Structure formats: structure tokens, C-alpha cells
Length: 153
Image (cartoon, rainbow, N blue to C red; front, top):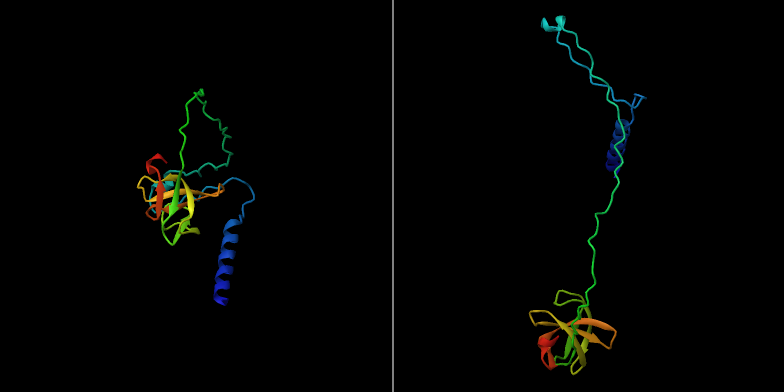
């Protein structure tokens, strides 16, 4: 534990020392230019330091939304979803939050419970039921006896 706090303290000191600047102005000074005095080039040419870099603020950008196309409201009839009555054939039938055994269990129906089907998945193995006009959940279709054509929901 003591070693861990020492590492944290060392990193904290390192970060704060890296963040502090000895130069009080806001311009960055250029790095020193190395001069090689072993060649004759250095004696004939003079080197001048690079110009100082200054920090300027980026231009402010204004976000505008693209023009939206004109939308027209057409009177299209909505399809009416028909519900069907069904009866539970298993001793206990799990009602779940989604169509599959991997979804969380909500509650269970007892055998011969009367329920209303309001939807199904395309594979015809899970049905969406409406319980007492307030709660919807998913049940396995193989444990139901449906009154009517299941393809209508």
C-alpha cells in the first residue's frame, strides 16, 4: 500500500512539474539551433533563430442545420392489429420482457389461463400477449392453444 501511494505521489509531482512553465510570456521559444564548428561552413554562414511561435485562437464556427425538405401529410390508413384469445396449455408458462428465453422473467401464467395475443415474431415461436389491459409480455407459442388464425396478428 505504501509503494502504491509513493508511485502516485511521484506521478503527481512529475505531472505538475511538466505543466509549470518557467517562461512567463505566452509565446513558445524556438529550440536552439546547433552550430557545428568543425566545418568551414559554420564560419562563413550565420544562423538566425527561427521566428517565435504565437498561439492564436481558432475561428469560431457556427453550426447551422441543413434545410429540411417540405413534408406533406398524406392520409394513409393504418392497419388494424387484431387480437386473438388463447389458453395456456403448460402447468406454468413464463411471461418474459422479450421474445426468447434469454430475456428476463416477468411472471408466470397458470394452466388454462385466458390471455389475449396482440403480436408475434416472424418465426412463429414467440407471441406478444396483453395481460389484463395493462401489461404486455412475451410467451412461448408452443404452450398456447390459440382461437383463430395466428397469422392475423
